[in-house]
Image 1 (cartoon, rainbow, N blue to C red):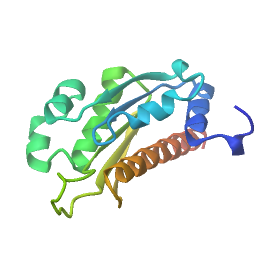
Image 2 (tube, rainbow, N blue to C red):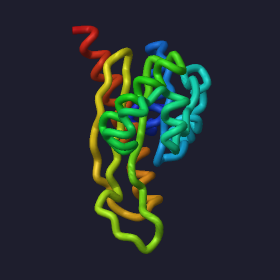
Image 3 (cartoon, rainbow, N blue to C red):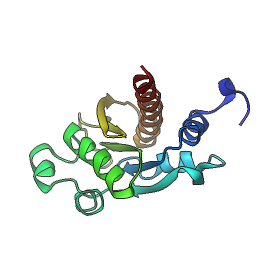
Length: 169
């Protein structure tokens, strides 16, 4: 893959996973598979990528990765709690060491104003530890989705490397 400073974010993640004999899965809502696509563009990813879940509907979130109906009712699909359950559920369902989840509002039906547009929650599960970040992205639907995918990959990289450093200490 060349020198580390020349690696893409995705290449860096995949190399880290290979080097540490870890696996990854994704649970995506508003990004609709963009994170999985970016990861699977990397040669060698088949060694570490378990699967990707696209859980756009609430029903899919419940059935595929075990998000609780009560969570969706009380907090909505776009919430810290839902992102947390998506990350945990995806990791457990796929038996993966790492799972990234994304849920958010990429854009309203055309012509409607909505102040929640751009609100995205990203969860990251690494070997039992879960953190969730809240983001507010700007732009059109495509721009929001691309920013969310980039932020999700950044979070995965940070969570993995931070987790590893803590283990060694």
